[in-house]
Length: 232
Image (cartoon, rainbow, N blue to C red; front, side, top):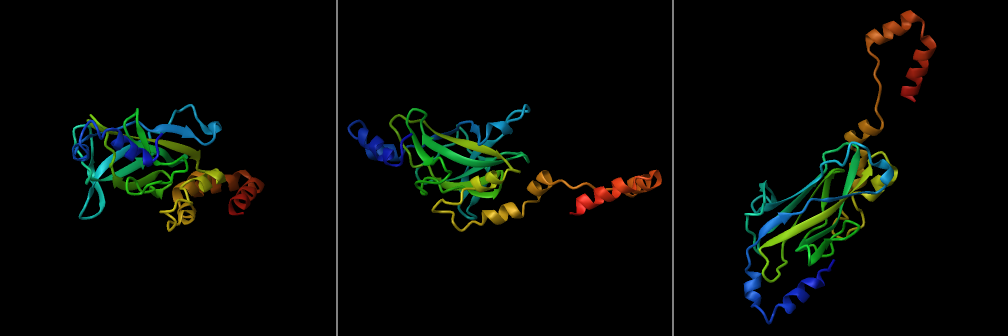
């Protein structure tokens, strides 16, 4: 994939064929490619298949600086000044996600907007995503890529999954070393996640009926051992 410098080489290449102004004023449709799903450890893949991870692109509401409700599609047009909002979501309790290796442009001439570590090399085009939980992230930026004869601008990303109960997973995502997200306390996010805690460390409750049944059947030792284990 090309880095951000590739944008300028593309425009220079077209200088003799069409005017810069024409390229910059292009209004383009939006095509979002299906996310490329990869696993940090292949042993965690289950027979139930991939989670249905999704990437959607929206306009940014300039009044609230939040994502507009309706996502952009192939018939919507954007220009250089359209501020975009990106949302990634994997509806799963088992896996945590990291968004990485994102690009925009065309499949033949992609320009990298998020690197292999999930960090932005150029935050004007795409900020490093902010994770509100271990399976949802949001970012904003401008689709400032134009190529000759382009009708639609394509967007694609890889979503890396890891098991939420794996300590190394919590270190991998969300990324902590990106220059533009150092203020986010993701360690606290993990520590306060009731979803992760309930999934990885489920608790067992004993109903009054179960308690009476155990007492009447003489299972004192088993009951005491069970309670001691739960309280330890």
